[in-house]
Picture 1 (tube, rainbow, N blue to C red):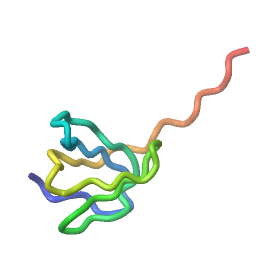
Picture 2 (cartoon, helix red, strand yellow):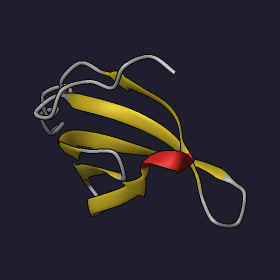
Picture 3 (cartoon, one colour):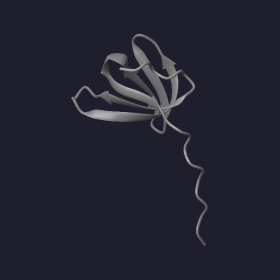
Length: 70
């Protein structure tokens, strides 16, 4: 796996759940250490075991909110 992005970067992290299914976490990478990644996204802070990570990459900022139609 490539080196992980630096904390403070907006990322998408694909990882394996205990059920064996893969899922993604999207948000700001808050913490990276030998044991865990912490991503702050729409679901709140997600603590992801590093051994479960399949891939992680930086992503661009979210698009601005769209205006309402009248």
